[in-house]
Length: 495
Image (cartoon, rainbow, N blue to C red):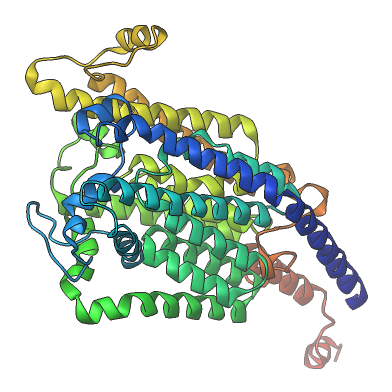
Protein backbone atom coordinates (compact mmCIF):
# COMPACT_ATOMS: atom_id res chain seq x y z
CA UNK A 1 0.00 0.00 0.00
CA UNK A 2 2.77 2.41 0.93
CA UNK A 3 4.54 1.59 -2.34
CA UNK A 4 1.48 2.61 -4.33
CA UNK A 5 1.29 5.92 -2.48
CA UNK A 6 4.97 6.60 -3.16
CA UNK A 7 4.58 5.81 -6.85
CA UNK A 8 1.57 8.10 -7.18
CA UNK A 9 3.44 10.88 -5.36
CA UNK A 10 6.43 10.42 -7.65
CA UNK A 11 4.14 10.58 -10.69
CA UNK A 12 2.59 13.77 -9.37
CA UNK A 13 6.00 15.36 -8.77
CA UNK A 14 7.17 14.32 -12.25
CA UNK A 15 4.04 15.85 -13.75
CA UNK A 16 4.57 19.04 -11.77
CA UNK A 17 8.15 19.31 -13.00
CA UNK A 18 6.90 18.87 -16.56
CA UNK A 19 4.26 21.59 -16.06
CA UNK A 20 6.83 23.98 -14.61
CA UNK A 21 9.22 23.23 -17.46
CA UNK A 22 6.52 24.19 -19.95
CA UNK A 23 5.80 27.32 -17.93
CA UNK A 24 9.48 28.30 -18.02
CA UNK A 25 9.34 28.19 -21.82
CA UNK A 26 6.18 30.31 -21.76
CA UNK A 27 7.56 33.02 -19.47
CA UNK A 28 8.80 35.27 -22.32
CA UNK A 29 5.46 35.01 -24.12
CA UNK A 30 3.33 35.66 -21.05
CA UNK A 31 5.61 38.45 -19.85
CA UNK A 32 5.60 40.12 -23.25
CA UNK A 33 1.82 39.95 -23.63
CA UNK A 34 1.28 41.29 -20.13
CA UNK A 35 3.73 44.11 -20.80
CA UNK A 36 1.74 44.93 -23.94
CA UNK A 37 -1.46 44.97 -21.90
CA UNK A 38 0.21 47.26 -19.36
CA UNK A 39 1.21 49.65 -22.16
CA UNK A 40 -2.34 49.61 -23.53
CA UNK A 41 -3.63 50.36 -20.02
CA UNK A 42 -1.26 53.33 -19.85
CA UNK A 43 -2.37 54.54 -23.30
CA UNK A 44 -6.00 54.25 -22.20
CA UNK A 45 -5.26 56.92 -19.58
CA UNK A 46 -3.45 59.31 -21.93
CA UNK A 47 -6.53 61.20 -23.21
CA UNK A 48 -7.06 62.22 -19.59
CA UNK A 49 -3.39 62.82 -18.84
CA UNK A 50 -3.31 65.36 -21.65
CA UNK A 51 -6.08 67.22 -19.81
CA UNK A 52 -4.31 66.92 -16.42
CA UNK A 53 -7.03 64.48 -15.39
CA UNK A 54 -9.77 67.10 -15.29
CA UNK A 55 -12.73 65.29 -13.68
CA UNK A 56 -15.34 66.07 -16.33
CA UNK A 57 -12.99 65.07 -19.11
CA UNK A 58 -11.84 61.92 -17.34
CA UNK A 59 -15.40 60.73 -16.76
CA UNK A 60 -16.43 61.61 -20.32
CA UNK A 61 -13.48 59.67 -21.75
CA UNK A 62 -13.70 56.94 -19.07
CA UNK A 63 -10.00 57.16 -18.20
CA UNK A 64 -10.16 58.20 -14.55
CA UNK A 65 -7.39 57.39 -12.06
CA UNK A 66 -6.98 58.10 -8.33
CA UNK A 67 -3.21 58.15 -8.60
CA UNK A 68 -2.72 61.61 -10.12
CA UNK A 69 -5.25 63.62 -8.08
CA UNK A 70 -4.34 61.97 -4.77
CA UNK A 71 -0.74 63.07 -5.28
CA UNK A 72 -2.05 66.59 -4.62
CA UNK A 73 -5.08 65.94 -2.42
CA UNK A 74 -3.11 63.78 0.05
CA UNK A 75 -0.28 66.29 0.34
CA UNK A 76 2.38 64.24 -1.41
CA UNK A 77 3.23 67.20 -3.62
CA UNK A 78 4.10 69.10 -0.43
CA UNK A 79 6.41 66.33 0.73
CA UNK A 80 4.08 64.97 3.39
CA UNK A 81 4.85 61.46 4.63
CA UNK A 82 1.84 59.10 4.69
CA UNK A 83 0.49 58.40 8.20
CA UNK A 84 3.00 60.70 9.90
CA UNK A 85 1.81 63.97 8.34
CA UNK A 86 -1.80 65.11 8.23
CA UNK A 87 -3.45 67.35 5.67
CA UNK A 88 -6.54 69.52 5.54
CA UNK A 89 -9.34 70.18 3.10
CA UNK A 90 -11.43 67.01 3.54
CA UNK A 91 -12.85 64.84 6.32
CA UNK A 92 -9.92 62.50 5.68
CA UNK A 93 -6.83 63.78 7.51
CA UNK A 94 -4.33 61.00 6.69
CA UNK A 95 -3.70 58.62 3.79
CA UNK A 96 -6.64 56.20 3.96
CA UNK A 97 -4.88 53.08 2.67
CA UNK A 98 -3.17 50.21 4.51
CA UNK A 99 0.48 50.74 5.36
CA UNK A 100 2.20 48.97 2.47
CA UNK A 101 0.17 50.91 -0.11
CA UNK A 102 1.13 54.14 1.64
CA UNK A 103 4.76 53.03 1.63
CA UNK A 104 4.63 52.54 -2.14
CA UNK A 105 3.15 56.02 -2.52
CA UNK A 106 5.97 57.46 -0.43
CA UNK A 107 8.75 55.64 -2.29
CA UNK A 108 7.46 56.85 -5.65
CA UNK A 109 7.10 60.35 -4.23
CA UNK A 110 10.77 60.29 -3.25
CA UNK A 111 11.71 59.17 -6.77
CA UNK A 112 9.90 62.09 -8.41
CA UNK A 113 11.51 64.81 -6.30
CA UNK A 114 14.22 65.57 -8.92
CA UNK A 115 11.47 66.50 -11.40
CA UNK A 116 10.28 70.06 -11.72
CA UNK A 117 7.32 71.11 -9.59
CA UNK A 118 4.97 71.24 -12.58
CA UNK A 119 6.05 67.80 -13.83
CA UNK A 120 6.00 65.88 -10.55
CA UNK A 121 2.32 64.94 -10.63
CA UNK A 122 2.55 63.30 -14.05
CA UNK A 123 5.88 61.70 -13.14
CA UNK A 124 4.26 60.28 -10.01
CA UNK A 125 1.51 58.72 -12.14
CA UNK A 126 3.90 57.35 -14.77
CA UNK A 127 6.33 55.77 -12.30
CA UNK A 128 3.45 54.29 -10.30
CA UNK A 129 2.03 52.87 -13.53
CA UNK A 130 5.43 51.31 -14.31
CA UNK A 131 5.54 49.62 -10.90
CA UNK A 132 1.96 48.41 -11.21
CA UNK A 133 2.66 47.12 -14.71
CA UNK A 134 5.53 45.02 -13.33
CA UNK A 135 3.18 43.72 -10.65
CA UNK A 136 0.74 42.75 -13.40
CA UNK A 137 3.49 40.63 -14.98
CA UNK A 138 4.16 39.03 -11.58
CA UNK A 139 0.46 38.29 -11.18
CA UNK A 140 0.22 36.60 -14.57
CA UNK A 141 3.32 34.46 -14.07
CA UNK A 142 2.32 33.43 -10.54
CA UNK A 143 -1.18 32.54 -11.73
CA UNK A 144 0.21 30.49 -14.62
CA UNK A 145 2.57 28.68 -12.22
CA UNK A 146 -0.32 27.74 -9.93
CA UNK A 147 -2.49 26.53 -12.81
CA UNK A 148 -0.28 23.50 -13.46
CA UNK A 149 -1.12 21.80 -16.76
CA UNK A 150 -3.39 24.69 -17.79
CA UNK A 151 -0.74 27.34 -17.21
CA UNK A 152 -0.84 28.82 -20.72
CA UNK A 153 -4.62 29.19 -20.72
CA UNK A 154 -4.67 30.70 -17.23
CA UNK A 155 -1.84 33.10 -18.01
CA UNK A 156 -3.41 34.26 -21.25
CA UNK A 157 -6.83 34.75 -19.66
CA UNK A 158 -5.33 37.15 -17.13
CA UNK A 159 -2.78 38.80 -19.42
CA UNK A 160 -5.29 39.56 -22.19
CA UNK A 161 -8.20 40.49 -19.94
CA UNK A 162 -9.97 43.66 -21.12
CA UNK A 163 -10.73 44.48 -17.49
CA UNK A 164 -7.00 44.53 -16.74
CA UNK A 165 -6.47 47.13 -19.47
CA UNK A 166 -9.28 49.32 -18.16
CA UNK A 167 -8.63 49.15 -14.41
CA UNK A 168 -4.91 48.48 -13.87
CA UNK A 169 -4.08 52.09 -13.06
CA UNK A 170 -7.20 53.33 -11.31
CA UNK A 171 -5.66 52.73 -7.89
CA UNK A 172 -2.84 50.80 -6.19
CA UNK A 173 -4.75 47.47 -6.03
CA UNK A 174 -2.25 45.56 -8.18
CA UNK A 175 0.20 45.68 -5.26
CA UNK A 176 -2.06 43.48 -3.14
CA UNK A 177 -3.12 41.41 -6.17
CA UNK A 178 0.49 40.62 -7.07
CA UNK A 179 1.46 39.74 -3.50
CA UNK A 180 -1.63 37.54 -3.13
CA UNK A 181 -0.80 35.71 -6.35
CA UNK A 182 2.74 35.11 -5.08
CA UNK A 183 1.34 33.84 -1.78
CA UNK A 184 -0.83 31.28 -3.57
CA UNK A 185 2.15 30.27 -5.72
CA UNK A 186 4.31 29.78 -2.62
CA UNK A 187 1.57 27.64 -1.08
CA UNK A 188 1.29 25.60 -4.27
CA UNK A 189 5.06 24.97 -4.13
CA UNK A 190 4.69 23.61 -0.56
CA UNK A 191 6.26 26.59 1.19
CA UNK A 192 3.55 27.49 3.73
CA UNK A 193 5.81 29.77 5.76
CA UNK A 194 6.68 31.92 2.76
CA UNK A 195 3.06 31.81 1.65
CA UNK A 196 2.15 33.28 5.03
CA UNK A 197 4.79 36.01 4.76
CA UNK A 198 3.56 37.04 1.31
CA UNK A 199 -0.05 36.90 2.43
CA UNK A 200 0.76 39.08 5.44
CA UNK A 201 2.35 41.64 3.12
CA UNK A 202 -0.69 41.49 0.84
CA UNK A 203 -2.97 42.18 3.82
CA UNK A 204 -0.70 45.10 4.71
CA UNK A 205 -1.36 46.50 1.22
CA UNK A 206 -5.12 45.87 1.05
CA UNK A 207 -7.61 44.33 3.46
CA UNK A 208 -9.21 41.69 1.24
CA UNK A 209 -6.41 39.04 1.27
CA UNK A 210 -7.20 38.49 4.97
CA UNK A 211 -10.21 36.54 3.73
CA UNK A 212 -7.91 33.91 2.20
CA UNK A 213 -7.03 32.61 5.64
CA UNK A 214 -10.51 31.13 6.09
CA UNK A 215 -10.38 28.73 3.10
CA UNK A 216 -6.76 27.81 3.82
CA UNK A 217 -7.55 26.93 7.44
CA UNK A 218 -10.69 24.96 6.47
CA UNK A 219 -8.87 22.91 3.85
CA UNK A 220 -5.94 22.26 6.20
CA UNK A 221 -8.38 21.04 8.86
CA UNK A 222 -10.11 18.75 6.39
CA UNK A 223 -6.77 17.29 5.26
CA UNK A 224 -5.20 17.27 8.72
CA UNK A 225 -2.34 19.54 7.62
CA UNK A 226 -1.78 21.12 11.03
CA UNK A 227 1.91 21.94 10.69
CA UNK A 228 1.46 23.69 7.34
CA UNK A 229 -1.47 25.64 8.77
CA UNK A 230 0.61 26.75 11.75
CA UNK A 231 3.47 27.92 9.55
CA UNK A 232 1.06 29.81 7.32
CA UNK A 233 -0.59 31.62 10.23
CA UNK A 234 2.74 32.41 11.89
CA UNK A 235 4.19 33.80 8.66
CA UNK A 236 1.08 35.89 8.02
CA UNK A 237 0.99 37.40 11.50
CA UNK A 238 4.74 38.03 11.57
CA UNK A 239 4.90 39.79 8.20
CA UNK A 240 1.82 41.91 8.89
CA UNK A 241 3.13 43.00 12.28
CA UNK A 242 6.60 43.73 10.92
CA UNK A 243 5.12 46.21 8.44
CA UNK A 244 2.38 47.69 10.60
CA UNK A 245 3.86 47.81 14.10
CA UNK A 246 6.31 50.71 13.52
CA UNK A 247 3.53 52.89 12.13
CA UNK A 248 1.14 51.82 14.86
CA UNK A 249 3.68 52.82 17.53
CA UNK A 250 4.82 56.14 16.09
CA UNK A 251 1.84 57.33 13.98
CA UNK A 252 -1.26 55.80 15.51
CA UNK A 253 -3.69 58.44 14.24
CA UNK A 254 -2.44 57.97 10.68
CA UNK A 255 -2.42 54.17 10.96
CA UNK A 256 -5.99 53.96 12.25
CA UNK A 257 -7.34 56.26 9.51
CA UNK A 258 -7.92 53.38 7.07
CA UNK A 259 -9.99 51.44 9.58
CA UNK A 260 -11.90 54.51 10.76
CA UNK A 261 -12.67 55.55 7.21
CA UNK A 262 -13.77 52.03 6.24
CA UNK A 263 -16.13 51.90 9.22
CA UNK A 264 -17.66 55.35 8.78
CA UNK A 265 -18.05 55.65 5.01
CA UNK A 266 -21.51 55.24 3.52
CA UNK A 267 -22.88 53.53 0.43
CA UNK A 268 -20.59 53.68 -2.59
CA UNK A 269 -21.91 54.10 -6.13
CA UNK A 270 -20.94 50.54 -7.09
CA UNK A 271 -22.64 48.74 -4.21
CA UNK A 272 -25.87 46.85 -4.71
CA UNK A 273 -27.10 48.84 -1.69
CA UNK A 274 -27.08 51.94 -3.88
CA UNK A 275 -29.59 50.20 -6.15
CA UNK A 276 -31.66 48.92 -3.21
CA UNK A 277 -31.73 52.32 -1.53
CA UNK A 278 -33.04 53.92 -4.71
CA UNK A 279 -35.74 51.25 -4.90
CA UNK A 280 -37.22 51.91 -1.49
CA UNK A 281 -35.21 49.81 0.97
CA UNK A 282 -35.22 51.88 4.15
CA UNK A 283 -32.51 52.32 6.77
CA UNK A 284 -29.52 52.13 4.45
CA UNK A 285 -28.56 55.73 5.18
CA UNK A 286 -27.73 54.64 8.75
CA UNK A 287 -24.07 53.63 8.61
CA UNK A 288 -24.27 51.37 11.67
CA UNK A 289 -27.23 49.44 10.27
CA UNK A 290 -25.56 49.31 6.87
CA UNK A 291 -22.38 47.85 8.37
CA UNK A 292 -24.41 45.36 10.40
CA UNK A 293 -26.42 44.22 7.39
CA UNK A 294 -23.40 43.91 5.10
CA UNK A 295 -21.25 42.13 7.68
CA UNK A 296 -24.12 39.86 8.72
CA UNK A 297 -24.81 38.85 5.14
CA UNK A 298 -21.15 38.10 4.57
CA UNK A 299 -20.97 35.97 7.72
CA UNK A 300 -24.00 33.94 6.63
CA UNK A 301 -22.44 33.36 3.20
CA UNK A 302 -19.08 32.52 4.81
CA UNK A 303 -20.78 29.96 7.05
CA UNK A 304 -22.32 28.38 3.95
CA UNK A 305 -18.87 28.21 2.34
CA UNK A 306 -17.45 26.56 5.48
CA UNK A 307 -20.18 23.90 5.39
CA UNK A 308 -19.50 23.38 1.69
CA UNK A 309 -15.76 23.01 2.37
CA UNK A 310 -16.36 20.28 4.94
CA UNK A 311 -19.37 18.55 3.36
CA UNK A 312 -18.49 18.47 -0.35
CA UNK A 313 -18.12 14.93 -1.74
CA UNK A 314 -14.50 15.74 -2.60
CA UNK A 315 -12.34 18.36 -0.94
CA UNK A 316 -12.75 21.62 -2.93
CA UNK A 317 -9.74 23.02 -4.68
CA UNK A 318 -8.10 25.99 -2.96
CA UNK A 319 -8.82 28.56 -5.73
CA UNK A 320 -12.50 27.57 -5.69
CA UNK A 321 -12.89 28.48 -2.04
CA UNK A 322 -10.70 31.59 -2.33
CA UNK A 323 -12.93 32.84 -5.13
CA UNK A 324 -16.16 32.05 -3.27
CA UNK A 325 -15.15 33.78 -0.05
CA UNK A 326 -14.07 36.87 -1.98
CA UNK A 327 -17.39 36.96 -3.84
CA UNK A 328 -19.23 36.53 -0.54
CA UNK A 329 -17.37 39.60 0.71
CA UNK A 330 -17.94 41.72 -2.39
CA UNK A 331 -21.60 41.08 -3.22
CA UNK A 332 -23.04 42.53 0.04
CA UNK A 333 -20.31 45.14 0.51
CA UNK A 334 -21.14 48.82 0.76
CA UNK A 335 -18.13 49.60 -1.47
CA UNK A 336 -17.40 47.96 -4.82
CA UNK A 337 -15.02 50.06 -6.88
CA UNK A 338 -14.35 49.35 -10.59
CA UNK A 339 -10.78 48.17 -9.95
CA UNK A 340 -11.96 45.41 -7.59
CA UNK A 341 -12.26 43.26 -10.69
CA UNK A 342 -8.49 42.84 -10.33
CA UNK A 343 -9.03 41.01 -7.03
CA UNK A 344 -11.13 38.39 -8.74
CA UNK A 345 -9.25 38.02 -12.00
CA UNK A 346 -6.50 35.51 -11.01
CA UNK A 347 -8.95 33.49 -8.90
CA UNK A 348 -11.57 33.20 -11.64
CA UNK A 349 -9.16 31.63 -14.11
CA UNK A 350 -7.88 29.21 -11.46
CA UNK A 351 -11.29 28.31 -10.06
CA UNK A 352 -13.02 27.79 -13.40
CA UNK A 353 -10.88 28.23 -16.54
CA UNK A 354 -13.75 28.06 -19.02
CA UNK A 355 -14.15 30.82 -21.57
CA UNK A 356 -17.95 31.28 -22.04
CA UNK A 357 -18.74 32.37 -18.46
CA UNK A 358 -15.43 34.23 -18.24
CA UNK A 359 -16.20 36.27 -21.37
CA UNK A 360 -19.71 37.01 -20.11
CA UNK A 361 -18.27 38.23 -16.83
CA UNK A 362 -15.74 40.43 -18.64
CA UNK A 363 -18.56 41.98 -20.65
CA UNK A 364 -20.39 42.72 -17.42
CA UNK A 365 -17.29 44.38 -15.97
CA UNK A 366 -16.76 46.42 -19.14
CA UNK A 367 -20.38 47.59 -19.05
CA UNK A 368 -19.97 48.65 -15.44
CA UNK A 369 -16.63 50.35 -16.06
CA UNK A 370 -18.09 52.71 -18.64
CA UNK A 371 -21.40 52.94 -16.82
CA UNK A 372 -19.95 54.28 -13.57
CA UNK A 373 -17.92 57.03 -15.22
CA UNK A 374 -20.73 58.19 -17.48
CA UNK A 375 -23.18 58.13 -14.58
CA UNK A 376 -20.81 60.23 -12.46
CA UNK A 377 -20.54 62.58 -15.43
CA UNK A 378 -24.31 63.02 -15.46
CA UNK A 379 -24.25 63.70 -11.71
CA UNK A 380 -21.50 66.28 -12.19
CA UNK A 381 -23.14 68.20 -15.04
CA UNK A 382 -26.69 67.60 -13.81
CA UNK A 383 -27.03 70.86 -11.86
CA UNK A 384 -26.51 72.72 -15.13
CA UNK A 385 -29.76 71.27 -16.43
CA UNK A 386 -28.36 68.69 -18.83
CA UNK A 387 -29.93 65.23 -18.85
CA UNK A 388 -28.00 62.00 -19.09
CA UNK A 389 -28.68 59.76 -22.08
CA UNK A 390 -31.26 56.99 -21.89
CA UNK A 391 -30.47 53.57 -23.36
CA UNK A 392 -31.53 54.38 -26.97
CA UNK A 393 -29.62 57.67 -26.77
CA UNK A 394 -26.52 55.90 -25.49
CA UNK A 395 -26.69 53.27 -28.23
CA UNK A 396 -27.18 55.98 -30.84
CA UNK A 397 -24.12 57.90 -29.58
CA UNK A 398 -21.89 54.84 -29.46
CA UNK A 399 -22.91 53.59 -32.91
CA UNK A 400 -22.03 57.05 -34.21
CA UNK A 401 -18.60 56.73 -32.56
CA UNK A 402 -19.43 59.53 -30.14
CA UNK A 403 -19.29 59.77 -26.36
CA UNK A 404 -22.33 60.67 -24.23
CA UNK A 405 -21.31 64.23 -23.39
CA UNK A 406 -23.87 64.51 -20.60
CA UNK A 407 -23.40 61.00 -19.28
CA UNK A 408 -26.15 58.43 -18.78
CA UNK A 409 -29.33 58.44 -16.76
CA UNK A 410 -29.60 56.47 -13.54
CA UNK A 411 -31.71 53.70 -15.02
CA UNK A 412 -29.03 52.87 -17.59
CA UNK A 413 -26.40 52.91 -14.86
CA UNK A 414 -28.41 50.45 -12.78
CA UNK A 415 -28.45 48.09 -15.77
CA UNK A 416 -24.64 48.19 -15.81
CA UNK A 417 -24.43 47.74 -12.02
CA UNK A 418 -26.69 44.69 -12.11
CA UNK A 419 -24.82 43.26 -15.11
CA UNK A 420 -21.64 43.14 -13.05
CA UNK A 421 -23.41 41.88 -9.93
CA UNK A 422 -25.25 39.08 -11.73
CA UNK A 423 -22.30 37.88 -13.81
CA UNK A 424 -20.14 37.59 -10.67
CA UNK A 425 -22.98 35.77 -8.90
CA UNK A 426 -23.29 33.43 -11.90
CA UNK A 427 -19.59 32.58 -11.72
CA UNK A 428 -19.99 31.81 -8.01
CA UNK A 429 -22.94 29.51 -8.74
CA UNK A 430 -20.96 27.65 -11.40
CA UNK A 431 -18.02 27.18 -9.04
CA UNK A 432 -20.33 25.78 -6.35
CA UNK A 433 -21.81 23.45 -8.98
CA UNK A 434 -18.32 22.21 -9.86
CA UNK A 435 -17.59 21.58 -6.18
CA UNK A 436 -20.78 19.57 -5.74
CA UNK A 437 -20.13 17.66 -8.97
CA UNK A 438 -16.31 17.28 -9.02
CA UNK A 439 -16.49 14.99 -12.06
CA UNK A 440 -17.44 18.07 -14.10
CA UNK A 441 -14.50 20.17 -12.83
CA UNK A 442 -12.33 20.74 -15.90
CA UNK A 443 -9.19 21.18 -13.78
CA UNK A 444 -9.57 17.71 -12.31
CA UNK A 445 -9.76 15.85 -15.58
CA UNK A 446 -7.03 13.26 -16.07
CA UNK A 447 -6.70 12.43 -12.39
CA UNK A 448 -5.44 15.84 -11.23
CA UNK A 449 -6.47 16.87 -7.72
CA UNK A 450 -5.49 20.47 -6.91
CA UNK A 451 -2.46 22.06 -8.65
CA UNK A 452 -2.72 25.05 -6.29
CA UNK A 453 -3.17 22.90 -3.20
CA UNK A 454 0.45 22.38 -2.21
CA UNK A 455 0.40 19.99 0.75
CA UNK A 456 -3.35 19.59 0.18
CA UNK A 457 -2.85 18.18 -3.32
CA UNK A 458 -3.69 14.48 -3.19
CA UNK A 459 -3.99 14.43 0.61
CA UNK A 460 -6.57 12.17 2.23
CA UNK A 461 -9.49 13.60 4.20
CA UNK A 462 -9.08 13.52 7.96
CA UNK A 463 -11.92 15.78 9.09
CA UNK A 464 -15.07 16.14 7.01
CA UNK A 465 -18.76 15.51 7.36
CA UNK A 466 -18.38 12.55 5.01
CA UNK A 467 -15.62 11.03 7.13
CA UNK A 468 -17.70 11.49 10.28
CA UNK A 469 -20.73 9.84 8.64
CA UNK A 470 -18.62 6.92 7.42
CA UNK A 471 -17.09 6.54 10.88
CA UNK A 472 -20.51 6.32 12.53
CA UNK A 473 -21.71 3.87 9.88
CA UNK A 474 -18.60 1.69 10.27
CA UNK A 475 -19.00 1.63 14.06
CA UNK A 476 -22.66 0.68 13.73
CA UNK A 477 -21.84 -2.14 11.29
CA UNK A 478 -19.01 -3.36 13.52
CA UNK A 479 -21.29 -3.40 16.54
CA UNK A 480 -23.98 -5.30 14.64
CA UNK A 481 -21.60 -7.97 13.30
CA UNK A 482 -19.36 -8.40 16.37
CA UNK A 483 -19.50 -11.82 18.11
CA UNK A 484 -21.36 -11.82 21.43
CA UNK A 485 -19.29 -11.23 24.53
CA UNK A 486 -18.65 -14.14 26.94
CA UNK A 487 -21.03 -12.79 29.59
CA UNK A 488 -23.80 -12.53 27.02
CA UNK A 489 -23.10 -16.11 25.83
CA UNK A 490 -23.40 -17.45 29.37
CA UNK A 491 -26.60 -15.52 29.97
CA UNK A 492 -28.14 -17.01 26.85
CA UNK A 493 -27.03 -20.60 27.63
CA UNK A 494 -29.85 -23.04 28.66
CA UNK A 495 -30.08 -23.85 32.35
